[in-house]
Image 1 (cartoon, rainbow over the protein chains, first blue to last red):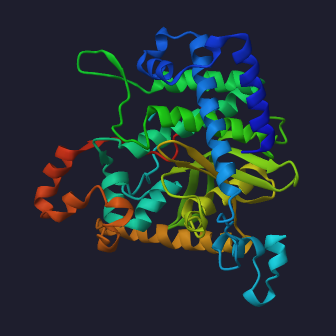
Image 2: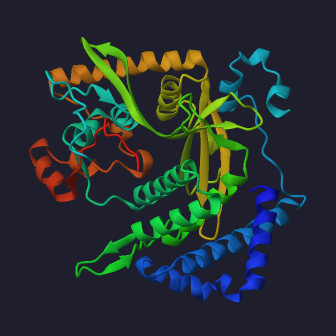
Image 3: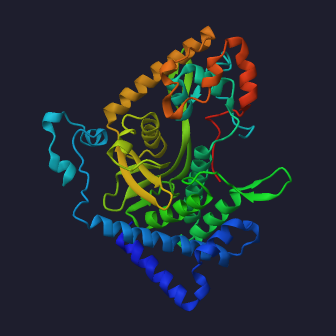
Length: 103
Length: 317
């Protein structure tokens, strides 16, 4: 998830919520939307569903970012033993230059 | 399956397949008996299965999004259209003819996590560096059904066929083209997950096909994987490259596999590969192969339905 997309969605959600309190669905409302026959829903209902799903995404992204900031979190590094990395370089192991991969 | 697609089998040896896709080739490589049941006799498990249903709707929704964008609709309008389509498509009709939302009974792959994964994926993709390639004819490279002659076996031209959702390039590295393919999994999107795609039948075929279809320099397949959790969907995008010499080897190997299929068809004998029975959660035909050959037909009729698979069936909206 890029920072750009998160902030853009945040901004869109906040603006719409400020203008129309019904724009963001509560969890209960989301259940109702999923229980309803979609043929009975209008575009406004679908848009509320989409906004609520996006709000949950933003919550998840924020929680992930907080988790990643902890000292315990370590990023897995690619090594020349990875099959896709080997294919990308397409060189014998002796000629591998790790900077090609990790740079 | 439409009736209009030509048969993928030889006119002179009707159990010899002459048009192959990665699915049927994968069946044959796993076990020629499995291949015989599914491809030649056309038996499929009665229940489509949660994972197949979920994956099918997910892929169709993303394909529809690409189609809407290619028609000039903006991101939000395209997401709305795709969500409406998926919500409708995931309604089932019960015995009394009443429409009910699909209930998978699975906490990971269900109607809500499907819609969530589609929306999160499309938002994330829209903000990322990958853009659909525009072909020389000015059209976006989406919904590309392909079929081309690769070689001959026993004097018969062999077609390699399939369907690519789209071809993309990175805005930071224009000119390097990738065939895009979406996957869903419950597994973590780590090194082990992506390792399964090298070597990999589908990835090699799609790279070869991408080069043939577009005439562009296709580097490999861009796998966009979605890890479906109960409360989240996490995405990772990984280029799966294929060097030219590896593709040449894959094509030569594929010819040998299809020569074996021809040998089986001539002998009318498709041997079991017992070492594949436990793969991927267990072969669906395990119970059939477990009984005497004389009882197998009735087991097939009990637990399976006829649903023919045709690699020459073009897809598209």
